[in-house]
Amino acid sequence: MAEKAPSRGEIFVVDDDPAVRDTLSMVLTAGGYQVICFADGAALLAVARTRTPACILLDVHIPGKSGLDILKELHGEDYPAPIFMISGQGDIAMAVSAIKSGALDFIEKPFRGSEIVARLDEAIEAYARRQAQNAQSRIATLHFPGREPLTRREREVLEQFTAGASNKEAGRHLGISPRTIEDHRANIMKKLGARNAADLVRIVMTTQRQGQV
Image (cartoon, rainbow, N blue to C red):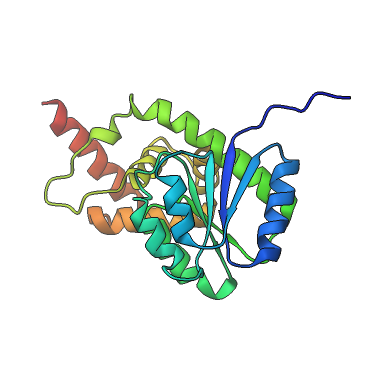
C-alpha cells in the first residue's frame, strides 16, 4: 500500500451550499490539501482565531453575518493567510469591496475545480514569498504625508508597479488576478492624487528621496 502524501496544509471553506462544499472539498483534497468545511461564519471564526490555515475560501452570502462581515472580524488585511471571497456574478461590486477590506482576491461562481487548485497553489506560494520580502521592502515603510494611507496590499501592488511590472506580471507575483491589480492601482492613484502612471512613479520617487534626506 502506498504511503499517503503529506498534506500541503489546511484550507477552510465557508459556504452554506452543501454541493459547493462537497465539490471544493473533493478537488482541494485531490490537490493535496486538508479541507475543513463550515456552513456559516460563526463556526469559522471559532476555529480561525485559534489556528491558521494555508488559505480561506469565504462565500459572500452565508447565513447570519455576511462573508464581508466575517472578513472584517478576521481583520483580513492582517490575517496571516490569504482569504479568497467566493461570489456569484451579481456580487462583483461586493467582492471588490471585500478586497478593500483585505481579501486577497475573489473567485466567481460557477468555477472549475482544476482552475481553483492552480489558483490557490499560486496564491499560497506568492503569499509566503511576499511575507519574506516585506521585511526588506522600502515601500512598505514609506509614508505619504497628507495622503490617505495605503493598505499593505496596495503597497505590495505599488512596489510591483514602480519596479516596472505589468498588471499581469504583478498579478502573477502577488498571486491575484490582473483585474484585481487594476482595482488596487486605481485606489492607489486616487489616494496619492496621481493623474497617470508617470505621475504616480514621480510621487513615489519624490517621497523616497525626501525620506533619505
